[in-house]
Length: 183
Length: 154
Image (cartoon, rainbow over all chains, first blue to last red; front, side, top):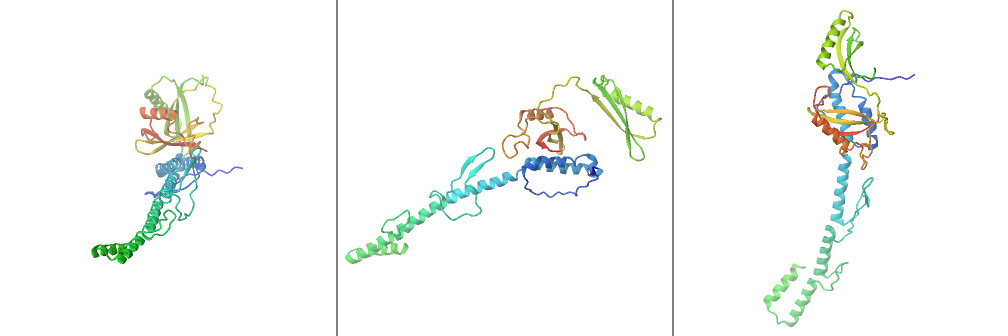
């Protein structure tokens, strides 16, 4: 024997309404819409609650159809990829757009501090660091391997001038001052 | 004769136990609504001496039935439904349930097959009809525009 319980005299919580963002599988939308629709007949609600009750139901049906949470998370992913590319130079490729957007590589939970393109912000900063390290100190770096840095050349110059002892003392003092600045 | 256009007058009564019953009369299709209302008043006044239940409602229905309706489409199935959410002039949301919706759903994206494509020409035409004519909700609000719509699993 089938037992059917008729829902009636429902009363929604009083206003004001606090809103919440929810995550749901889109496949459930038609069923949720249908379940909510079964709560829209007038007899379901207490006489004074019908208008508000049905408007609450309609607002949830609308939210289910309009979605939006995935768009927000998609934009977050877009933002992550933009920053990842700008900072580290990681390249992302659109693999497909239908039936859904697929971008490779997928976003990982953690990120190594590894520069993937010299044109990125960190890549350019690394290039400048290597340039300074090699140019001033003469250190060999992956990108720069000039044998003598500015400091080495100044020391060599000062030593040479000291040995010959025929340079203007004022010019010699300036050379010593530059050597101190890059020390 | 059953399929001819007709005006249906339903006069409803309620007893002390809140039980209801309806007496149905029919009149000619060509009568204006004011004349049908007058007829309903006369009928209900005449019935007042016959029944001691309380008159609480009169329904007037102009009914037309197709004598030879066209064959439904092969894919038609009224178990499938679409829910159209429509604003009104008081910014409430009203709903119309469409039986056996055709090819009006989105075909790409996450909501493909689930959400109605509001840019579909048939939906756009419906939208125009709503905007142009004086369609009302049951609480006498002017219907506005379709803001969202989707398949309904009832």
